Length: 157
Image (tube, rainbow, N blue to C red):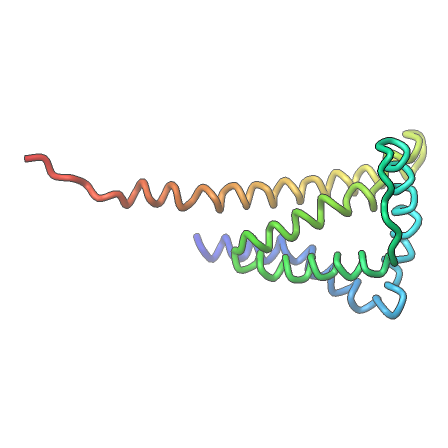
């Protein structure tokens, strides 16, 4: 069963590893295509947050966000492959921060083609997030179950 679990983690993490590898190779000096795609979406997200909450989102170079995303995906997926909850937490953090910014279906009219495409990608990322949370929950419940099974039996006299 351990082999099947490992293969499952490798297949799951391959989504993140391949994405991180591609973004790393395209990064360049300006953050690459990922930064060019993320900049306008981040600007819209910042304006939305500012208008709804009154909080000002600080200005920074978007290539640092892309670099952090690549690092979270790369390191998180490698750690996740070997069963680490730290890796799963890194991937959860990545999903929670970037999914609503990158797949901003809520900024489009429901009749537009972009809405359907972005909503589908958003839903797929929610599925990945759910699987990560499931992994963390299962990982945290295993020691409790093993302790109950290995509890020594007491003899009654």
